[in-house]
Image 1: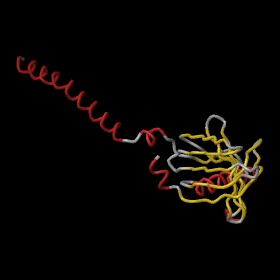
Image 2: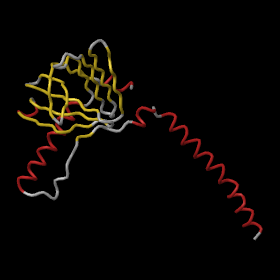
Image 3: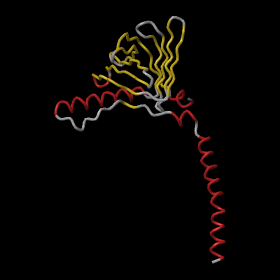
Image 4: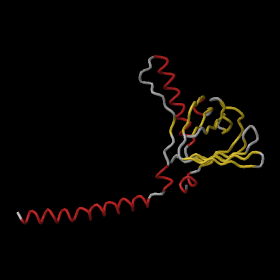
Length: 181
């Protein structure tokens, strides 16, 4: 009996050391991961549930979901630089990690919006993805319009779920910029 008590007491004495080791390992893993990647939430396409629908309503729902996914794939890790239709200069970056930076200069002042997640909504795709309108939203009510006309990128203003005042932009890869954020 004395042996069991001493073995039990030794096991109890080791438990706090093991717990301390687990806390140390957890802290090391947490500190090793960049904070921006730990908090960012991957972007997504707004997808409706089409399971309960039937017939033409189900087909229309599937088409809307596919359009949102198509535009999302085109926007991942991209930077759009140009001028909106209202004359405002834009420099927008959409990362696959979920981070985004929207810089807009109008009237000499620059506004920058940064966030950890964004999503594509209300996309309308035609001609196999070479022509589309979509709205990119983020938490807090931020919404911007993105479009493509015949392979040429355009950005604009979102108003009441409609795209307006489109202007030409140049799309470049933002993989390097997204990797450093």
